[in-house]
Structure formats: structure tokens, C-alpha cells
Image 1 (tube, one colour):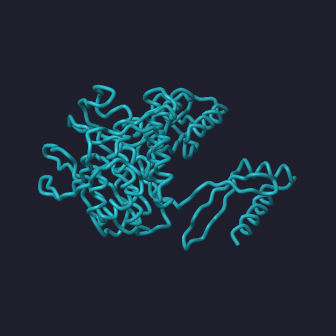
Image 2: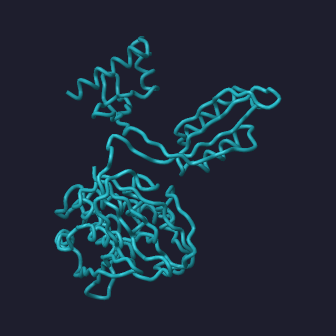
Image 3: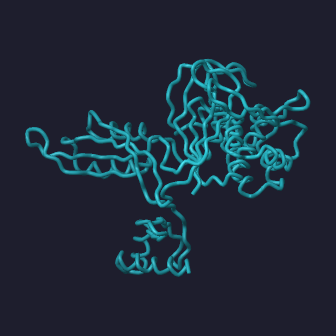
Length: 392
């Protein structure tokens, strides 16, 4: 499995992504040829090798052949892509990225997606950046993308809507759930296009996953950043073990000795409703020999603050402990399967040696057991037989 790791130490923009992909071996002529499949006003794509401090990267410049920009609605952009002769994979990747941008703009401006007209993002260079990045990822046969956390800078930017704080509102909307850290730079180094690409395509934001390194590509940004080279680095390699996935989680703990035990059920329900990965209770012997409970919640990083609020609001704890952990897990997905008893949700886990395990959702399993007046074990075996036959 081919993995690309986006090292965004100086941010990310559409042209930086294109430049890094070209530096990895994506031919410029291939880019130009594929983009011609989208009917757009005349424009040029030029590339150059440029230095940022002691490192070199590919700088991509896209220029209109007249001074007028292009304003398009999401629907118009979607139709341009869909009616082109681009590959289905490139069309879907491009459409998903633009969809995220449309949703972010609609949220920021309080409008329906159908009413959103893009200006900066609808310009030719942004269409070329997003579709071009999709073409490059497909050409390099990249299966999975991971990213470093992204920098949060300060200052102001000028755009169609006037003077706005940096990062722009639409950029921040796109980066909800993405780990970020402060950087003392008064520049927009994570652009809306860059935020849209990485937030749509990245499977996680953490240190680089295990891979056998093959190539490194650098895409150059447009301005100087003081001591930091304005480059996006993409590391390309083969995954060491494709049976596993790696991500990060936050473990939250609290010791509780003064809460009605009946209340734990409601607390756990609320946590699971809000996306907790797991919740467990363990018996404790606390100070002065009081019996107590260790409440442990496993949360995704983007849900931590929400789960923290639930703990303080729905339990008697006055303090929590938390720490971030790495998780290695077997690949899994949830799908729906039609059976004689209706639609059943099933978790499919890809084990080692390409073995596949099917786990029906517990609530759906209970419904079948009640309907057929059989045990849960019999209902599970009945469904397993259906799934096995469906795979033959």
C-alpha cells in the first residue's frame, strides 16, 4: 500500500501540494493534458525549481490570460468536473474536496450550499489546484494520506469579503477536528484550498506512520517566512504492514466515590451518543478505604472537549486526568447488509493473512433473536452463515 505523509511544517496551499507532487514524479505535461479535459477560459501552468533557504522545491504558477477572475457556483464546478473525461476516481476526489469547501462557506455565511458562489476558490487556479492534486495523487497511485498537525498563525488577510483575521473563517471551518498548534507568523500559510485538500483526504494527523521511504517531494510557497523554509514536504513510501491502521486517541479518567451507581448508566449513554470510542468502569479501593469507581473514557482528539463537558455536567467528579495515546488497530468498516429479517448493520474487520471477520451490531442482533425466539448465539451464527454465503 502506497502511503503519502504531508509534513506541513510551513503550512499548506494548493500550489504547494501540486509542486510537491510534481517533485515526487508527477509529470507537468500529464497535469496540463488532464486539466484540458475541463473547459475553462485560457490559462497557463508554469513550474520552476526554487530555493527556500538551503532546500529546493517546485514552484507552480497558474496565470489567467486575461485579468478577469472566474466566479462559479458549487453546482457549476461540480458539473464541469462531472461532464469531463477525467477518471471516475479523480472526479470523486475533486468533487469531495469542493463539497467540503461549499459546506464551509455556507456555514460561515449562513447560506444554503446552492446559494454559494465562489470567488477565490472558484478561480481557475483553485480549480486547477484541487483537480490537479487529485490527478497527481491518482497518477502516483497513493492509497492513503496522513498529515502532521497544522500551524495556526495570526494577522489579517484581504479577500472578497474585506479584512479578516488569519486564518480565515472558512479555513477554520474546514479544519474543525484537525489538530493545530500556534505559530508566531503574521501570514496566511494554511490557505482555504490547502485546508480543503488535506482535511478531505487525510486519514489522520500524527507523527509519520511506519513506511518504507521511497521518495521525498517539496512544493514551494510564494513568500519568505523568516527562519522557516516556505515548503510543503511530502514523504512517499510503502506501508510496512497494511493489516493495521494507526491513529491517536485521548484517554480520560476520573475517580468517583460519591455518585449514585444508577447514574453511571445515563452517563455512559450520553458519552456514547456523543461519539466516545469506549467507556469502562473499574472498582477501586480509595482513601480511607472507601469503595470507588475508576471511570475511563477513550475519546478521539476532536471529541475530547465535548466529552470533558459531559463528565463535569453529568457526574460528581471535580477533576479529570487525560493523556493522548497511539492506537494500532485492525482495519474495519461498517456496512449494511440485506437479510430476510431486514437491513442489518455489520462491522467488517480485516484480520491478518487477509482473513475477514463479520460482527453484527448488537442492537440489530437482539432484534433478530427476539423475532425468531432464539438465543443471541444462534442469531449470530445465523447471520454469519448469511455473510459467508454472500462472499462466495
